[in-house]
Length: 613
Image (cartoon, rainbow, N blue to C red):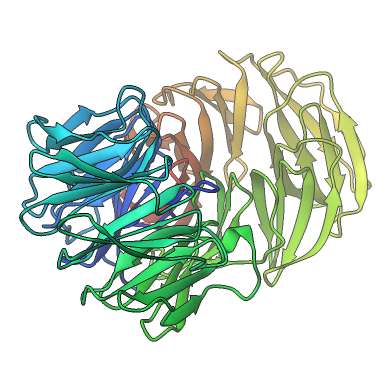
């Protein structure tokens, strides 16, 4: 008996308005690394690849910086607390959700780490950012011993780079409009150059041969320096129509590419003041298309848009692919007929192809007409999909477009389908809409509710005020009639109800994650032994044969409960960092007792699993 990982969808980088997001490239194994929430994502450069993805989730605070070692076998990552962790990122041949091994971790500064650099020996690291007593630190990766002082700045340091050859040199840039040059190791202050930028400097890079340094900033200026001495060479003013967030060198050390808030990338030569080529992300100017990150790989120029999209340009200038996906926690998923729908806390709504019992294809954004806020629920009926969110709107989707919508009276909690229409649950009210979103009926109640579940021609509603369940019958014309049945009181407020496909059972979870299993024919209690969760359950789904229930919640665990053997459980304790938010079955064979299900999490990933009972 087991629950085994199969595949994982890759979340997009987290971005902050007005801030650069550094993407790290591993040329030895053709991989990219970037930050997402409290996670670090390591994915293949090739967007078509099905090679395993690594999701590192051992940071307590949101991650802010990541950098591959030159060998490609280690990563140094930093977070908002100023901590840097160094961990093993050796390529894996098979999918695994096990966490990489941390080799060392150090408290570097007292604020967010903004940038990290390794030396060519894979032994020394400089980490910089927003500190109080200091803005950066140079140390050996294994022992943490200091190998110099990062001084010379009077404000946050935004980027750091180390010359790839001996004798090593380092350069840092920051909010104080300065580039500071260091000799080393041990790294010592050499000079500060403050007159070549008039605004915040976002990024700095040594050329691959170490001959040049280039810095770029919000003042739209590109400044070029001598790599061995730090002496200023020249600057290019008004290089873009917007601030410049990132820069990267081509292998020839004569050409480099910049990424800007004007939605473009530009190629430059050290011997010219004019751009050699422009790479355009979008014809229209928008905040979401601002280019805030950059990685120059073997086959592609990969740029990061402020909306989280990864743009794949060929070096000839063609935009070959825009890779989209979730970059915020996923709240809800629903599988239907070979496709999977997912909704995020930022209102993003995606459709995924499911092939050969795994999530194999890239996500496709359904439409720009998404919710403006947290997506609460997704309900699919035939070819039509209904969604609702914290923007208090109920939407109807058909063929990837919104065909109808209605404004709701308050914040919705859930959608449900009954024969007479679509139910929308609110805090102390439930409304019935026709499939064309015409209001057919409503019922207000004197208690707080969190969940609703159709059962026959009736519905069950959680009563968190009295810690019990209420039952209502609904007529075809939308009239609600409360049942006189009194249910047993729960141990704590009920938060979720799931009715089995055959209608014989319904499982009710309370706020502590404990289930009570009822028999629907007489509403009697069958079992209270489904009690392995340690916190609130967020979603659960029955197998088609009504014998097993897969459950996930805030404790990050997956639990498969059995009706016939209630004291036995299959479990996978750390399925999603932060919590399991959604579940659905892709396939299940009742004879062999094998199946595949999918889960979504607050870590912005969707994962598929194989279960053998």
